[in-house]
Image (tube, rainbow, N blue to C red):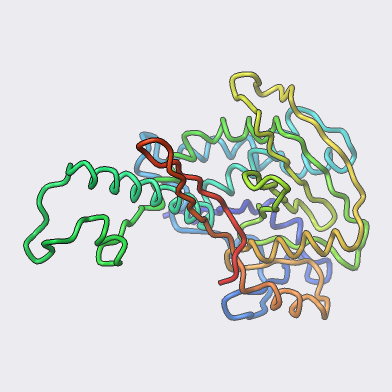
Length: 314
């Protein structure tokens, strides 16, 4: 069975340490264990790209053939402000792939579906659409059993992955038509980290919008700012709505981005240089990860569900 990487090796290799040559430094968040690794040995799952819900169970592999071989060229174009449609497609596709096929991405999307199933169940309960429950559960509705923890809604993470794979071109198109900030890190003593989920979220002044911040190399990151007015049918892979700013950022901004990277990592943080301060920095930000929060807002006879991603302390 294939061992599929949910974070592309070509991305991870950019964080190799010159001191270690073909290795990088890593820290696990769950036990703060420090180790050295190569790209091949991490961020992989047996048959991770295989999805039996799809007619072509390895469909995502054909998509990656247009992304991974062009990744290094794309980040070079970003750094040199030579951005073209292919560059945008490659970086947007990398982001879409991580969100779709990584364990963190599937976990987060599963929570969305779970909220929807629970809400539909409540509506069905109110309309008496379910058969009579067994006598040992008499007097309790299915909604109440779920609320009490006696019944659990379990989402197969491969199902949201299948939805994501089927829509990955649309997601790539969407990201590629947003506004980007290319973030140049000029501080060689404080390089960007990466992780097993290198698509951090960042709060904005709009409670409904989260920026995506993605480290691409130790000296380069990109911030993708969603456009709430974006309409997919108004754009295409020429990325006519794409806008870009290039900023050389401050040391404080570098620190803030690395903090987001660590907090949004699922379990492993990777970094280039063996600096004394790095383990302490990671330890301070280890108790966090991305979770989904569901807000139920009554609307007419139904309920409007607003599900948001937030960085929470565990």
